[in-house]
Image 1 (cartoon, rainbow, N blue to C red):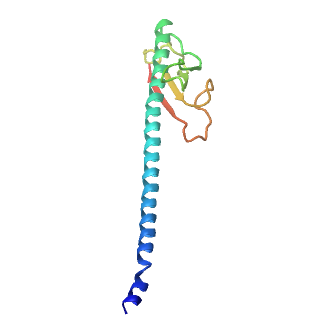
Image 2 (cartoon, helix red, strand yellow):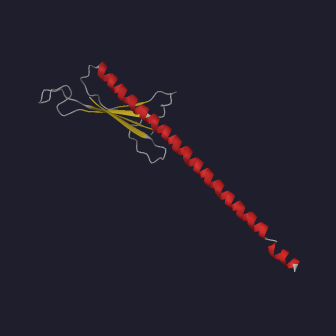
Image 3 (spheres, rainbow, N blue to C red):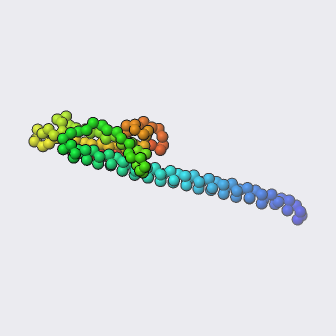
Length: 149
């Protein structure tokens, strides 16, 4: 009777060990997946902040150009790459200007001066290509900053 009981319970340890190995493997895969997702999200957040700073630098550059020119012109669209060797070197910036139909500096009917809107778009597309760049990459980052004068 004792031998019969031992034979019936002899495979229980093997089944339990296989079950525990499968559960631990599943937990390991879940942890690796979660870590990878967290790292990707963190990198994209950092790149988004850098893109914002690159777009802001584009606006500051355009405002500086306006001050140097006496503030009487709306520049044509300009695209440039951020300086190499910096944390922003992966970004291309396109600065555009939208002036009212009366032209900048022309007095409006109510006697006030005209205004214009500067827009700076920073993107991580191909270097030197105008932003926004056509991209299907999940790593593509773009930020836009506008200033109205």
